[in-house]
Length: 137
Picture 1 (cartoon, helix red, strand yellow):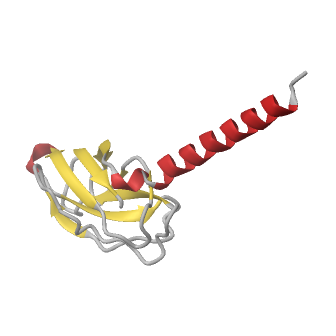
Picture 2 (tube, one colour):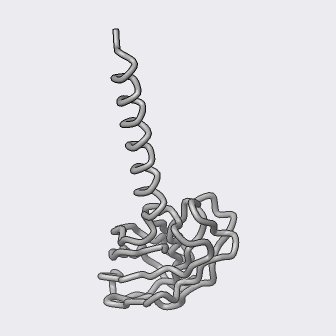
């Protein structure tokens, strides 16, 4: 049987762990997450792993390492349920650092889960692999 002091200490420890986990999740958007996905041919799509928004509506940043075959793709940040998408950043190529210009959306709120949505042109007749890292803020 646990003593009252021991129960209080365990409760306090559990609360601290929960708070630390929430803080880590809330600020996930302030660090880079890698992506490696294939964007389907003929206006196909691809998606990055998700991040948790740390700042409502903030723009994101993409550092593209490689876009296969010398192609370019378009990219935007969207909620993972696809209900709110920022403006497209056009012609992302290998070695591109967008700075903080991948548009956020007013309905991408603090704590929301967001991802990158990549798309090819109608004239791209092959699947294109994209590799890099991104930050949602």
